[in-house]
Image 1 (cartoon, rainbow, N blue to C red):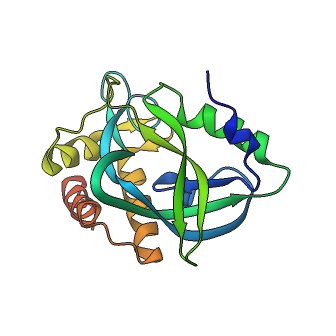
Image 2: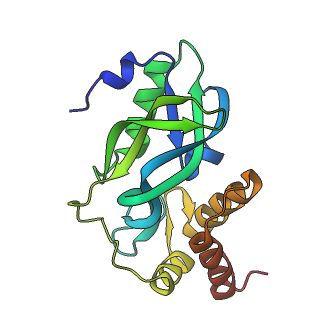
Length: 187
């Protein structure tokens, strides 16, 4: 059962570091760059629903805890009055297999203020946690996987494109984007 502290947050902020940046799926009143300390963005979760199948898993990004790291993404302020619906929607979307854990975390906004934001971090004890893969292994998986929400390549390329548009550098995603384009025969 989820902790309902998220429902009490006013305003409700959501920290997006991957697909929530380009496809939030809920009413957003404000968007700003934000940084979460103590976690990094990583293709460390096997995807058996959205970007892969049980037979041929894909990979999705997750927030993986690590000392002396941080992840820059977007803080999305939920439109007033939409908090409960947004939390329900995010739980349905993000907790489909219990590989993510819902957390309220402090994020530093671009303007220097800190807010508490709802986000989803990887459960390192879950069977879908696969942090041991090399970048080449990740590329091979992403290039070939397809799930209920479409090709794994689309997820990678959309996330990398949005990070680039926002001026957020992620060298691993840059390398993966180019390598997967080569494996997929896309220029």
